[in-house]
Length: 350
Image 1 (cartoon, rainbow, N blue to C red):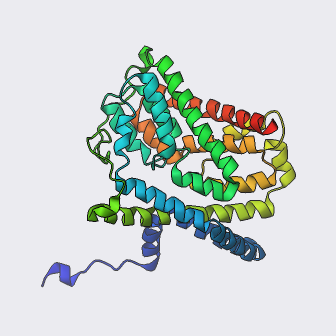
Image 2 (tube, rainbow, N blue to C red):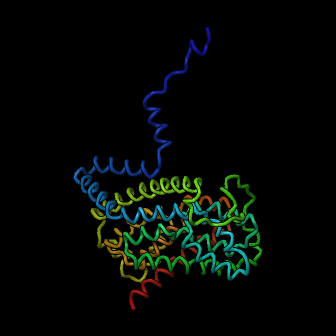
Image 3 (cartoon, rainbow, N blue to C red):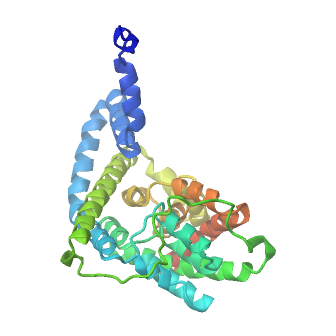
């Protein structure tokens, strides 16, 4: 008799199946469910308040979420990434300016921009314009603008967009001044990129009327569905966290740390680097911090520092470039986020 049939492998138990399902589960969903379960066990009364707060917040930002999802899907379906390669052609100063402006309208998130950076550097593009795009792109995108405006207002969203361009220009300019040094001559590690996801320098045209081609329509649907799920799950997690801050975070303590004091803005930048939340999730969280006493300048510093140092993207970057370039990037994130925070605070004081 067949040994396999005679002695089948033991069935996987419920506990093992649960562990396997947990490992495969989405991080944001797992975090949201875990927090809600913990609230239900520790503070049952708060659970109802958290669910109501999350539902109301999600309904309020719903129209902005739809606009952001459709905008990002349109840019991808049209092939707007073809414009990226054109931003890095010509004189370095012009390339830095173009890259900084492009970073505000490109559809890439902090992790999605990494394959683009890899392709640009391996194609021999100078480090300065790449650094401009690299630093600015995770901070702002068309969908991020609408999400920010829906939660924090159009004034704050516009200030963040201006700060994005300023950070790109400053990061690119600083790198341009340093890239002649031997330490920055070869920014890449000795790596191979087998999953760069296409060469952004490839020839091609942008088809803004994507609906005229079936394949682009299919890409639009896939992108809209993927972005909607991505944004939705992170925003739900953020609203849950915000509800806890509203309920439990002492406003006077937060005001003392990141309110109107001399060190509020640099402290917010320092906190923003290790305390990164996904850029979309950070928006409602920051709204809760502002309600708790954080100044708008400190909030902008916190958001820009956190966006530039996304933990998943930072790990990918560390595997891509040498330590000196990686250290330069971290220093630029800390310094430039602090400066834009002071700049926004000064503008509000006028």
